[in-house]
Structure formats: structure tokens, C-alpha cells
Amino acid sequence: MSVQWFPGHMHATKKAILERIKEIDVVIEMLDARLPGSSANPMLAQLTAGKPTLKVLNKQDLADPARTALWLAHYNAQPDTRAIGLHAGTVAPARALIAACHELAPHRGGMVKPMRVLIGGIPNVGKSTLINTLVGKRATKTGDEAGITKQEQRIALADDFYLYDTPGMLWPKIVVPESGYHLAASGAVGRNAYDEEEVALELLKALKGPYGAQLEARYKWGWTAEAVARCKEDELLTAVGRKRGALLPGGRLNAQKAAEILLTDFRTGALGPITLETPEEHTRWLQAALQHEADLAAERKARQAARRGGSRAAPGTA
Ligand code: GDP
Image (tube, rainbow, N blue to C red):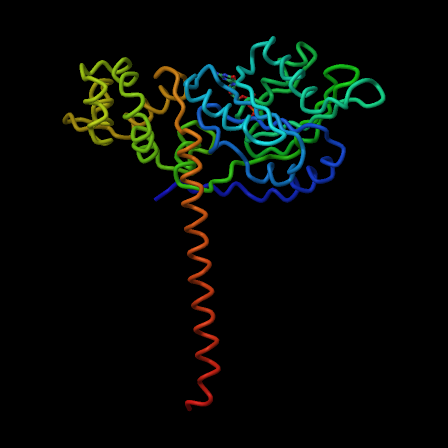
């Protein structure tokens, strides 16, 4: 089983972005720095293709700085693209984002040609927090309730700088199974879309190699990072549960409780700074998924051709 996430159509969002995009100078795509590849919405990139883009790796306070550097280099190597890491609640870096937009569209600015920026990102990525930080006390908008469609909002950050909030919801799109697990672990998809124990086991698979020492620091098993890396995921989940008293009567593991403890520790940053994927890994997963899709399409075509051949042959052979 993988993470099943079908939060509904995004036709209205798509239409609204297409209507707005013509007059947009820069697109800000907000990503979760702990899972930059998985937290992207491919539809946003498609609809805004050709526009200068600023990738904002938000929640960088929760992410692994070494991996954030890899992702920033990855995005900065793409044409017409800049990337910055951000903690959306901090004022000075948020203002630096305005400067980055001016660098991406140097011909815009001044009252005659104000800068027009569209900001988009999957729910819970920190868009409202960033907007609140940018506009200060005047902002009244709070975090989105999942499932509630928003109206487009235009926010004047200066006399010549307008920020357009994406209308509608940009739900995450699960292209590869790993992304489904990472989105679920981060809390970006609804709880009833996944099995917590399964997501916890996948999270441990991503953590035990690079972040064994951080797991040990949190749960104090008395193991080396190498020993943690050698453990199977279910052994680690059991070890989390035993250490934290997630037990059923008779001393058996309460796997559900152990999974919840691990997921909460990850989401709140109690495990220390963590990034679940590198650009190289995510590219590899994506290529494998695309290849798989292409193989399936080729098989389908071959089956259809065989059927057509069969039906043509049928009258003659009867
Ligand atoms: P939105 O759905 O994209 O508008 O997301 P919100 O702005 O409502 O943020 C979702 C949650 O993430 C809230 O609990 C925020 O406090 C938290 N958050 C947003 N930005 C950051 C950040 O940079 N670091 C941390 N640690 N939490 C953040």
C-alpha cells in the first residue's frame, strides 16, 4: 500500500492561474525545505513555465543545512531561477525575497511598471506565515483550513510591488511513492490518506542512514550511528515504542502509538534538522516513475495493436 491522496480537482485553480499569469513578472514557488522535490506541485511549474521563478525553501530551520545547500545549488543551476532558504517567521530574510524578485525581473519597478509577483505552494508550506511576516501587523489572513477554497488576494508590499496569492488550492501531487511517504510524514496530506505505522517505517528508512546519530540522541538507546543504520525499520520502531512506553497490556508494542510519537518528533523538529531527500535521489525516483509510466503505456499500445490485428484476422480465418 502507498499513500492514497485524491483531494479533488484543481480545474478552478488552474483556470485562475492561467488568467493571472500573463501579467505576472516573477513566480515564487514555496517548497518545504525538508522535502523540496516532493512538496512541489508540478502543475504550478507547468502553468508558469517561461516566467522567472524564485524557489523558496521554507522551514529551513527544520531542515538539514548541508542538504539545503545541495537543493539551492540544484535550483540555482536552472535557467531563470533563483532559490533561497527561509524561515517564514523571520522578518529580514523575508524582505530579502523582495530583492531577489527585483534581480529576477530587473526591468520592473516604479509606479509605471510595478513588480507583479504570484506566490504559490501546497497547503501548510508556510505561505500565510510568510505573507504575514512581509506585511506585518496589517495582515489578517491566517493558516488555511484544508479544503476551503480561497479567493485571490492582492497584497501591496510597496507602492510598486504587488504580491498575488494563488487562488484556490494547490494540492500536492504524488508522482512517486517516496514523495507520498515524505508528504505524509511532514503532515502535508490528510491523516486518513495513510497508515501511520507504514509512514513511520518509511520515515525510519529515510532517517536511519544519514540521521542515525540524531535518532540516538533523541531516544538514547545507547547505539552507535552505524548500529542504527544496520537495524531494520520495524526494529527501530519497536525501540522507539519501548523507550517511550508505547506498549499494550502484556508488554507488546503499540505500533500505532510508537508511529505517532516518531512522526510528532519529526514534525516538531525534536529529532533535529532533517531533510528527507537529496536532489539526486528525487531525480532518480522521478525518472523511474516516468519510465514505469512509459512502459505501461507501451504495453497498453501493444495490447491494443494485438487486439486490432486479431479482429482483422478473424473474418479471414473463420
Ligand atoms: P500555508 O497553508 O501555506 O498558509 O501555511 P501556514 O503559514 O498556515 O503554516 C503552516 C504551519 O507551518 C504553521 O503551523 C506555521 O507556524 C508553520 N510554519 C510556517 N513557516 C514555518 C517556518 O519557516 N518554520 C517552522 N518551523 N514552521 C513554519
